[in-house]
Image 1: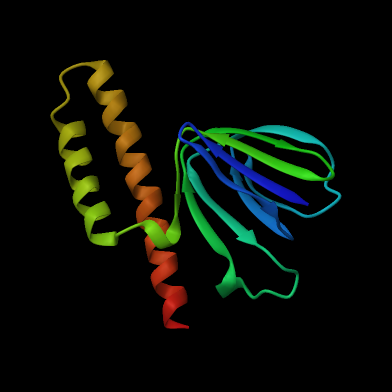
Image 2: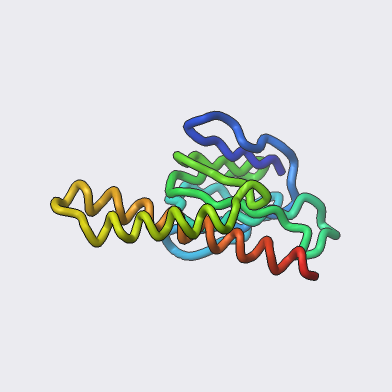
Length: 141
């Protein structure tokens, strides 16, 4: 099946894959070739991509995503999100610092708009840290 991961900046992936694990509002779902058609909401979380059937879990690619929309048919998975960061591109130290700034922004928010923006940033950086942590553990194996 083909995976398309599309952000506001453009196409991140448009390639054949064997399996995709997606964060949805109803929980994580695994998608394989021939999956039943589905349209659902993507929540901020981790996309895991297995390119070949015989690839181990340690070889799965990781992406930190913001929320968006997922469209699945029997031949394709299309994920439309504002942002997606490849696990290899996330620097843990920078993400920790960004999370600390976002938490400070949340704690100092003086109105609902500032508070909502801060919550979005906290969520984004927490997902990115989760992906960085998973990447670090996989490198050790």
